[in-house]
Amino acid sequence: MTRTALILIDWQQGFDDLDYWGNRNNPDAEVNGERLLKHWRAIGQPVFHVKHNSTEPQSRLHPDHPGNAFKPALAPIEGEVVYGKNVNSGFIGTSLEADLRAQGIARLVLCGITTDHCVNTTTRMAGNLGFDATIAADACATFDRNLPDGRVFAAELVHDVALASLNGEFATVKTVDQIIGSAS
Image (tube, rainbow, N blue to C red; front, side, top):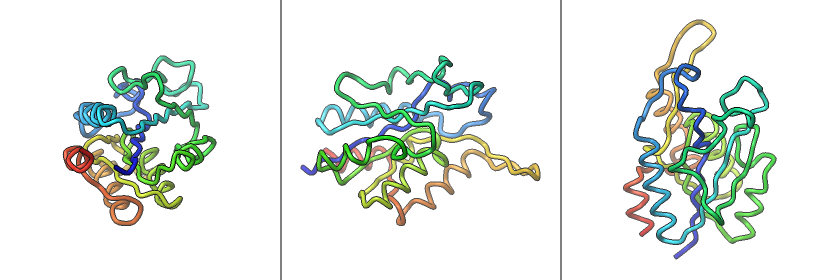
């Protein structure tokens, strides 16, 4: 079996603060991410975690805020590498690319929060760097987004458009069931 790494992006407790972030889509994202993680561990494929360490002191993802911590069900276990970042891509300012290449890993499955920011940026970079990327659509989530003119775009629409912009160009978009079915 070709080694395929699971990249878990920003599964942090700070994203549970909906008063801070606003309306969110896909309430099952964590459950689906956990299913994917359990499967990856069970089949002995490599798992990597990416964590956002905001430089903004008021952010729920700042290292001094309790929200910076991983969600318990998606937290790393011994032997799983964690990459701290303070930009949207898990490849910028980390050794993620070098570590994947050193292990001969060319295929990636990505999931996390938020679909249109850190998941999107990391997935785009993975594709641009030549990795064969798959994004787990139902193991990602995002929030409503606003434009300066007052228009609000619902989280579900933002999520779907972000996935559509990745599919076929930077990655293949699949469900967790589809990914598990092909990785067994």
